[in-house]
Image 1: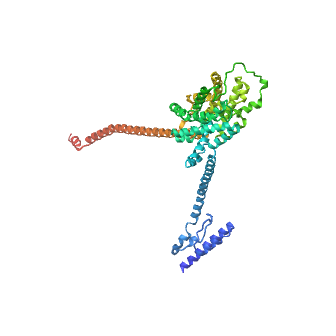
Image 2: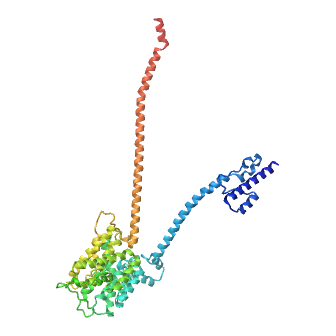
Image 3: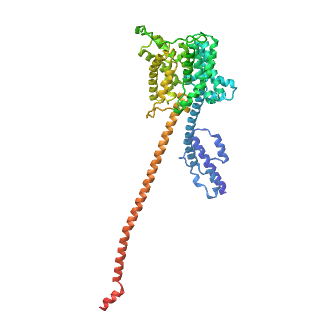
Length: 525
């Protein structure tokens, strides 16, 4: 009878709990009601301030039912405690989702921007002819320090717009140089990056531009192929010298081989006549009122196009787009370099036609790109250094042009090579002017990320060393304190020992005075 009464009390108390909760929340809890009626209720979600008066009156013999009623309020507390944990878990999940979106976006951009690394990995498993085509396109773009086949394809489109004959010679030159590097078993990674093709395309293009035999002179392809295949030989020889100072070869093989061909043939050659270059012998007729400002601003894209020997502004604009696809930093510095060349030409009173023709801009374009983020990590200091290098290259270009014209030769890209190598050899204690190791050079954005990671690691290393130094100091101070405490305790012990011996002496004397013998002597006396 007592057990039955306790069960009735328990069911009544649980149903009262349910109705109180239902009245407070205003909800419909049919599912919970079914659980209550079945006797398997665990009151979750009941406010902590609601108490049940019937729970205190459960008899002792109904303790087997206590697990059904116990821990009702603590469970609500556990649920409430779990809520902040879930919210804390949702926050990292949100950040991780943003990180995933960012990673997917970076992955998507890497398919066509930068050096197109995923495409390069995919090309490794393709047929060799397809790989060679990729290497040729990368070699065409590497003239502007761009390792991107899409940019190379756009550059070839600009060359076709300029002249199909010139574009054909450029393609033949790049292909010949790449095949020559394969035959010589040069580094396959350098070949795949187009580092053995860019001098070949310049040799092919400029041999066609400087030829006085006209377009579609098919015999010109013979010296084109021969000189282009010699590019890897000269590049390898110069690399063995420049590697001692961790310097690139730049376009020195192109300069050497084109000048060699032009000196060997000359203007009065029957088979391969060249354009005649002569030094100036009179003052140019400069009238500043006749300065054509539209042509002056047009010389900026023309200066970019003159890197490939093209004087078409539309071709230069296409080249700028190709640079922007791969690296916006490279594109900006190319435009800045061409503008600096134009300003320098006006400052040195150069003939207006030479400025309009972009001859003052193309060396400055290459110099500004090389220093502004390519071989130096991009900071505002290196950006200013790139601007200074471009001005220096413009002045050096004027000097070299005058000297080379006396020998009937063009300046080619000698000013760029000499000025860029000079600025790469400078030494400074400024930490923000950091020259990248040649093995780490990729494209400006990636170079900048590498520089930031390196600086972050340096700061972490300094912080770790500082913490270790603090810990060592604390340990040393602790040891010194222990030594001081030990010394102090020893001194205190030493002080206490004489006092203890004196007390013993006094105690011994008093004992002797109070001894029975002394008392006996005193009595007898």
